[in-house]
Length: 293
Image 1 (cartoon, one colour):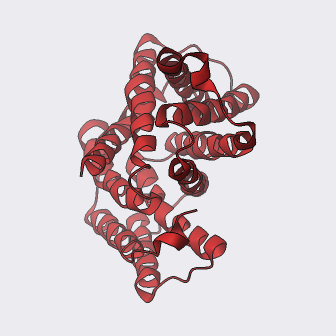
Image 2 (cartoon, helix red, strand yellow):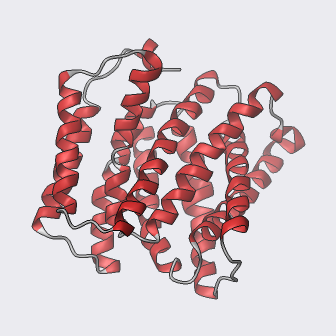
């Protein structure tokens, strides 16, 4: 229960991130924003490692470096980078709606990599979720929307793969949650910095944008990702995906209150169908030996 409460706290912090990022992205380019955010958070986590374990607290097995680097690219360069680019051209609620299909990606990976077969309930759940998404968009999708949705879908795919790789490390308990979070975030941040320098102009954030960046870096990133990684010692990736679905409702409420994003009846019904469909996708509890890498 404590792990569930910790995970729900993280989902609340991440939901508030969408509102704060929409405000800051008026002034700062998306990839640069993400790169600065995760660079600050990485420095905080590295400093915490040095304080608790000295220089040895940063030590990693060379054999694990490729997989740690892969997790960083998937979870930060791809998932967080493309998510914030999508957020720059889509409403916050729409981004959250698209990301709720991440459990479907987890199921697809389970089928492709582990040879498992989805149940009839799961297939039905995918259909319900897709129907809800179609109802939400209502056929009024522009080219810019399609581009943003495509980027967010790839972001969700990266996040699903990141959860599976991270779960592999947490099952082995080779590293503490703090050390693992630091290493993976540093690897992913390097990729974000490279993309920001290559594709975006460098702009100095204003004082208000910088204050948002610092809050997101310290609380919603360094603290939240550490807690999320720690929770993966107790809960499985698909269990966390269920809790993460609550963000759709949280973001819809926050966006309506603070960003003025309006919700029609068809959009609300669409959101409910997506939540129901994703719940059905995760309803069947897979065999532990087959699910866990």
